[in-house]
Image (cartoon, rainbow, N blue to C red; front, side):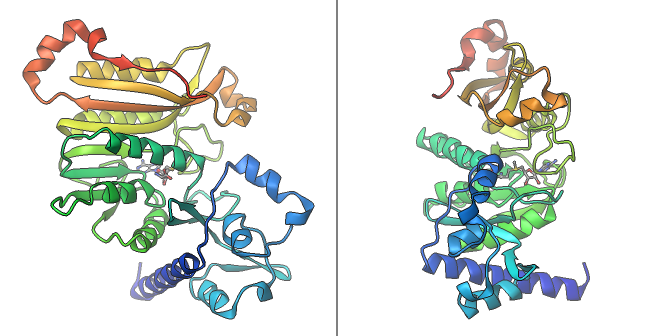
Amino acid sequence: MNITNNAQANSHQHHLSLLLVYLQLHEYRFTTISPASHAKVNSRIENAEANDLIGIFGWNRPFKRDIIDAKLFDLMQAADIAVRVGRLWKSRLRVSSMNGLLFLHSAFPTVENEAVFFGPDSYRFANVIHQFFASHPPPIHRAVDIGTGSGLGAILLALALKAPEANPDIIAVDINEYALNLARVNMSDADIHHIQLVNSNLLSSVGGNFDLIIANPPYLIDKSERTYRHGGGHLGADLSLAILATAIERLNPGGTLLLYTGIAIVNGHDAFLAEATERLILAGFTLTYSEIDPDIFGEELESEAYSSADRIAAVVLAARKLAQKSRIVHFKPSIKKQVFINTTAAR
Ligand SMILES: C[S@@+](CC[C@H](N)C(=O)[O-])C[C@H]1O[C@@H](n2cnc3c(N)ncnc32)[C@H](O)[C@@H]1O
């Protein structure tokens, strides 16, 4: 990127920050739903155009220039997110809210390869992070959010580890530079300024070990292989397995991997669980595994790639590296007792 491009990107980010301040002042709130539901709601005749902030930035409908105040429209233009659609305008970015925090992410529908994701999986991932911290984990000095997208996971880590005496090193990585740009703005809006943002394929561009690794990676087979969506491999689990391998290598003794992902269940069998259990046990980890939703992205089952799958489940794998190597030797013969696998699905 040359100096002019850099200055332009900084100016866009500055105006996006001001846009979030504007939305906060107007108490903007919007919960992002699944693409299929979003499309259904927007297709209603009365929803053809936006008539308020939620319509513009949440539902991402086209709008008439004069329904918003001039100051806001100027901000949108300065941030380069106001796009002409015939005689109307549309925002190039959406804004979702979670517990008072605002998150910029890509326009609907998210068709581009570089789209920045925020959706129902983000809310489920956030719950997983909250529950982890509610369980009083051991002290965390260094943590990383792999595939940070809008920056959600890293922001929640920073908020959870905010005790005055703690000065944790928090890193957010993504392979998508545009996601890192939006994450930077979202972090600034959350008044969090100490997270290190790194463009990295998993942890390949980040050194050292961690006490906590969290991730909500892509887990589907996506025909157009969009970065936020395509997990790779037979049924989308490749990236989840690669994160598992990274955690085995890069967690400190006593450290935890918290992985939220989606898994295709074939003939009642969860191949990811079988593979993950074997690898983790051999590497000296304990683990818990829960299905937190038995049936997500049901519409994907119509595609050829999922012709053998019964369903796609949202799962949470929490794996802890044992603190002392000597325990691993003792641990191997009694593997089953050490593993708590809770596959009870949430209703
Ligand atoms: C499903 S989105 C999750 C975003 C965010 N963590 C959330 O919960 O809203 C997956 C993210 O992983 C990123 N990603 C995909 N492959 C990656 C890789 N090999 N290394 C790092 N990030 C990756 C994508 O760019 C995307 O931002």
